[in-house]
Length: 214
Ligand SMILES: C[S@@+](CC[C@H](N)C(=O)[O-])C[C@H]1O[C@@H](n2cnc3c(N)ncnc32)[C@H](O)[C@@H]1O
Ligand SMILES: Nc1nc2[nH]cc(C(=O)O)c2c(=O)[nH]1
Ligand code: SF4
Ligand SMILES: [Mg+2]
Image (cartoon, rainbow, N blue to C red; front, side):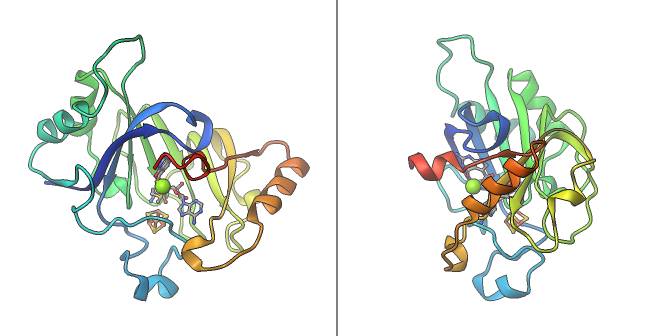
């Protein structure tokens, strides 16, 4: 049984695939936070910008089989009138609590490329085409290689230097959006300064928030 908070068609807003048409499938639940505001201060991840509780979002629900969820996702891709490869991004919450090899294989059989946004604390199933790891504080990484490492910045207990030698093809700093924390501070300026001083790192702005497309 897969529990999905919401699923929608949009553009990837972050990282090296920013601007690419994508079906987002947001799984319910996370291993680093309950998702309840009362638990935020004591959570293992305290700055989350996402509601991932329950299955009540747009196109959310419970899916008994990989086939049922894959068909639900495939129906959100626009009817094929160009040469683009269909693309699904599994996120959450923490998608590696639920994503398995069977669901990935079924999406491949529907012609999809499969991307994942993970906090990196859980081992991924085989078959993922694009793996984005976003470390959270001092929570130990179970994944030290992949396509992109996208670090929310700044985090006092997760400085970029700690990750710069890992086996990723792309390294991004994403300014921490402080809206969920009711704070105002220019994390964009801080991330920009770090990328200029350390050119291995590129800036990832959350395009969907700037452009307002989800
Ligand atoms: C909501 S998380 C879900 C996937 C997974 N649990 C993770 O943390 O990577 C999706 C992406 O949003 C990023 N993110 C979460 N809260 C953020 C914030 N306040 N500012 C900027 N990025 C944030 C995460 O680091 C991750 O790259
Ligand atoms: N457009 C858009 N791009 C995204 N990239 C990563 C997101 C996420 O929440 O995982 C996200 C999201 O929520 N929306
Ligand atoms: S690990 Fe990801 S989903 Fe979980 S609380 Fe942190 S940012 Fe949110
Ligand atoms: Mg998001």
